[in-house]
Length: 136
Ligand SMILES: Nc1ncnc2c1ncn2[C@@H]1O[C@H](COP(=O)(O)OP(=O)(O)OP(=O)(O)O)[C@@H](O)[C@H]1O
Ligand SMILES: [Mg+2]
Image (cartoon, rainbow, N blue to C red):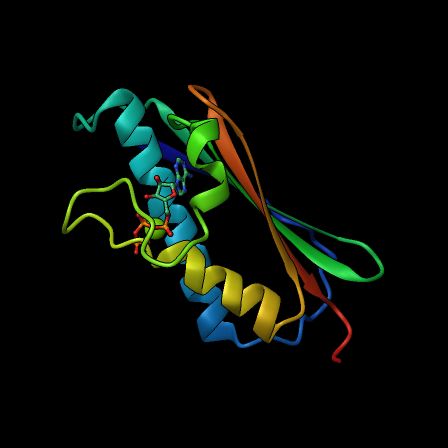
C-alpha cells in the first residue's frame, strides 16, 4: 500500500537519547502515516500508491528527523489539538489519541528537543523532530 523511502544522513553523529522511547515515537509516526495514506487511497492489497519518507539530517546543535507521508493531511480546524492527550479522529481500536501526546513529552520534556508539524490537507503531512546532539 505504501512505499517507505529513506534519505539518511551518512554523517549523523551519535545522539544521546532514550532509544526505546525515541523508537516508540517513530513507530507512532509511521503508523499515523500509514493510516493517513489509507484514509486517502484505501488499503487494497497489492496496490502501492502512498509514500512514507524518513529523512535525517544534522547541524551543529540538532539531529533532525523528518517523517513525511502522502496521506490525507490534517484539517486546519484540528491542527492545534493533535498533540492533546486522547485527541483522536480514529475509531475505537484504531487509535486512542496518545501517540502524539507521548511523543511531545518524550521529545520536548525528556530530551529538550522540538516537534513540529507541517501539513497540506489532501496532500500529506511532515513531522519534524529535532534532538539536541550535545548531552545537557
Ligand atoms: N500523519 C498524519 N496524517 C493525518 N493526520 C494525522 C497524522 N498524524 C496524526 N494525525 C491526526 O492526529 C490525531 C492524533 O494522533 P495520535 O498519534 O496522537 O493519536 P492516534 O493515532 O489517533 O491514536 P494512537 O497514536 O494512540 O494509536 C490522529 O487521530 C489524526 O487525526
Ligand atoms: Mg498515533
